[in-house]
Length: 167
Image (cartoon, rainbow, N blue to C red; front, top):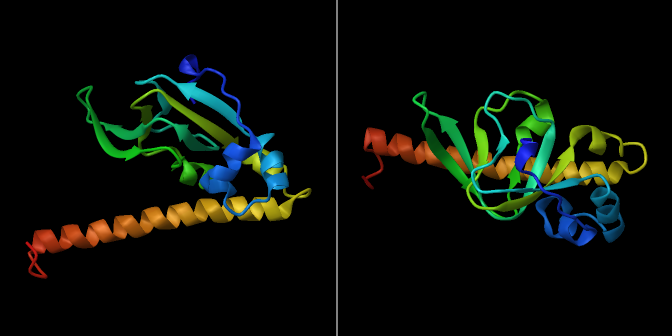
């Protein structure tokens, strides 16, 4: 995470409960998880993640807007997706630790909380149910993204091949 523009933000268990990570967690589990997360505020234009870098954290937007961007090669950026309050960021990097294929930049002043993979793994022995439910929430989000991408692929293919009569 690009820390030069981070400012401290406090995250409580109620914020965890309202996030996609906390939908299946009890209040006690949210309290445990809130002790494991760190919070950050980004100013508009600041980068959360850099393309090609590895980040072992998952991030949840609590306020503001981020954009997924990729460099065009000429110093310009192309926006691939806009992420809003409640969206998760960095799911695949959190799971598999591969370099990010795009950068994440704050479109507006943004607040978020982050959970490092090692912090979640540290809870495996003391609260395996919490870890299981957090991982289910992450996989559920990835599944929604994959389903949306598949739909977009079908629509684009139909448009290019001019099939199914809507084009």
